[in-house]
Length: 246
Image 1 (tube, rainbow, N blue to C red):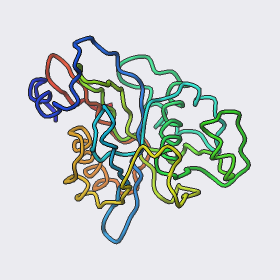
Image 2: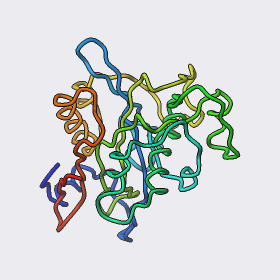
Image 3: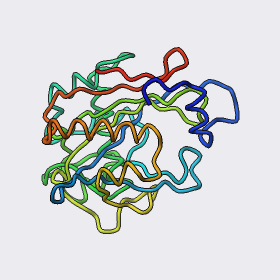
Image 4: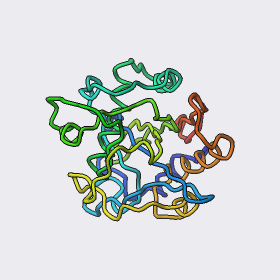
């Protein structure tokens, strides 16, 4: 998508265009690319969004959603790796330590809510926050140290929703509990583990295609996804979509 014009991108994403020309400010969001290995393949977890959704209906996406600032106050088994925390705070706009922490934790919370996967460590955990009661019920303390920051993308102007999304990743081995019936929100259907190449050929948003391409290149050079890797940052600038590196 690097270098594509706004008009070309608008045509590609016509279904996401807003009916009103009123500008929308991007809101923080996070999504989690959960990875697994099967032989020589790297698998990614994806789910199809319901057709009733106004934003990207019917598309295959990663679990994710809007960031709740209150997530920054959730106790964890371990914190973000310092290099990953620094990357999350880099780029345009002021990103505080608390805001970066909330972004990372929202990716974990959304993965539980949408896919029924609790990332963390088996340990006593309690909270008054309703959105995190599943972790308390199953004895899982959320954990951040294994998360890797993969990409950042700001939804272009003119869409029905606009997000400043951070794409994070973790491995299936970081999941402490897998609920057999999925998550409580039922926002995603047809949850599937797809080989990376198959995922890139699925019905996915254009930005997801770019992020998966970036991830494939990073994995080829760094199969373990060590902390502090380069993070592509996609955004609209002077009427063209550009790719910078954080």
